[in-house]
Image (tube, rainbow, N blue to C red):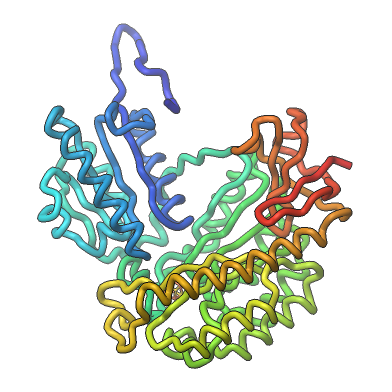
Length: 445
Ligand code: SF4
């Protein structure tokens, strides 16, 4: 059990009993960071974190509906909490995140043991619920989301997520995000700067700026301007950002990334398909050739940049020829890594109602082929790094091998090194001695 506070405090003869909360997070980094905000609020309200729903007084599901699989998993875990509630009717069950936003009141119909439903734009309402048990549903659009500062309880003292932009205006035809997270709203730069200055003050070395489309950030400065300001903050050694939309990646931004010493040489730039016809159906706003131009500009201006991407297999109307174009794109671009998924129809999105849906077995076959090609490319690139020296930020013990420490290069590759406790939290140079598909092995130099 992780504890923020002592189980019970005795102060001037007063006994304060703390309650336990179990938080289950599904989905992307935005959700992971939202759970850090939920934890921040709960910590202020005196809750302790427990790793089992059985010992919890409060159970929170922070949900994701980007794909059907995550949604099914959530409903089956929610179903299991029914028996806990039957045994202990005083426990509260809360559903947050994108499914909460999407389903709203329907959640109560599907699971009558749920007490409170709140969407990603209404995390601040949690405080009111905890204090009064008053709110039952909070899924309204929240135009103030960018100026509400919530406490954040981060698990790690080295690397921090920092939201710079909420929501999305792009309406890619397969995506639910604009419906669940609302329209794009940039957080004022002074809020972001003050958060990052505080993070530096408390010892954080790396920040990752978060947003569905960070490239379209705009408040009193644009994304390049924001990066320039953040680059001057003493104590912060590395700046990353995710996710970038290819259509908004300007030459000016590429120059800024190349100029600024703290901005890392890695970009996640979702391609989604190598076929311009499919990209059009996806409403992505660029052709395959446009995308190639951005890649060539990135590689020309930023030495040794690593590029990762997202690919969707079996989008409606995708023919064998379109699929072949995607596989050729992987061979041509040579990404450092990709996240690839089968197309999953999502309610309310245009793609869900499109004709020519691709049968499940063909989607699976195509996904397998895509992953096979990319695995070979990633392994080859990682092998080519053997003998080279890279700076890594040592994060701590490896999750898979306690005799090793783990860190990431500026290009976002995981490197495992022999354990030496004195390295944790430091930036050190390592020589890569072995390049594997999913990680690198290194030794300090
Ligand atoms: S850019 Fe497209 S895929 Fe990304 S969140 Fe917005 S709508 Fe979804």
